[in-house]
Length: 454
Image 1 (cartoon, rainbow, N blue to C red):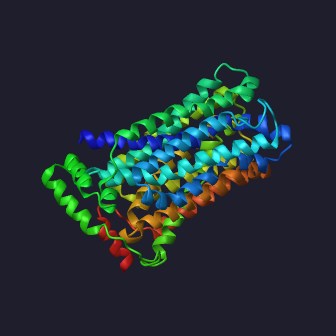
Image 2 (cartoon, one colour):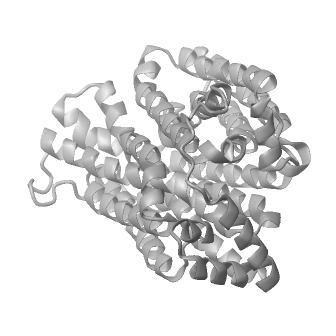
């Protein structure tokens, strides 16, 4: 038990980096606008595209995750992810490297910054698919659910850590210093967990399932025995050996409905607007009349809320079921977003806005945040799971990019309309889950597969 827990914790560092890299931009986005966007006379659309550029890489990383993890293996794919995180952190912190003068405000520097953020995004896309895959393939069946759920906790914890890091860097500093230098330190801080992740991966094994797939049976059996004991290890090895067959099934072998449900789960998880709240949190609080360092402190408060309610989801998903949690979360998100839209329309700034942002984020973190990933890992039949997950993950990052990059432009048009739109998406997500998504609580993967065969 201790051995598999240690392996899981190493793998979840990939989830932590996933959260860290996607949220580090929240503290730096205003400074990026002041340092790179405004001096070049670019629009809010260019600002939104730059802040969201990492998501292009996330789409690429998610789309190629199936191919990479099959050719390189799960462990080497995670190593590649760690390397990409490290290079991205260095490059985003100092985009002038090699080709430009320090402090230069040019289109070339802006493009270099975007390039390094896309590199990091590829790392995020890989980690988002391969980390749960690694944990799922290494963990004993009886504790697999909890161990895979730890990856979602690690993502949220990574976001919380970077909120504290950004706040610590900005605290007590002038706005001018933050806009000139501070934002660089925010990106540079990512090098520490990236290096730690890459080093620790040298000490973990490849998954038994992949080793069996590439005919390294002795190594696979050795790891299974170490995790499960000799008798159970041999039994599991026989099961894996009988199922590890190269299937060339069509992606729609079980019909189009299961693929569409996987895509829509991913799209709704983003269209409800959660990453707007995560990426632009300090800006949202600043627009409500809060000072910059205070806005980052309130972002830390949000991060704590995220962690607490993610833990609630981990301990209730197998008791309440997937559908009740998703529906409850959709109701809470709709209430939060519609309330923020009304407050924005009447330009009411105060504690009420913070309260409803917390209602919204708490509702998401106890439902759509972790449960979407649980369902994506469960609903696809064995023969098409790898390809189907790659499609769902790519769709998720594409939706994330669309929502995040259009936020500044939508806010210029109308704050009330923007938050109202996310509220409408929350309501639609409720009806989608109610009508289309099957309950998977307590069912084996084979039992779930029979739903699609019917």
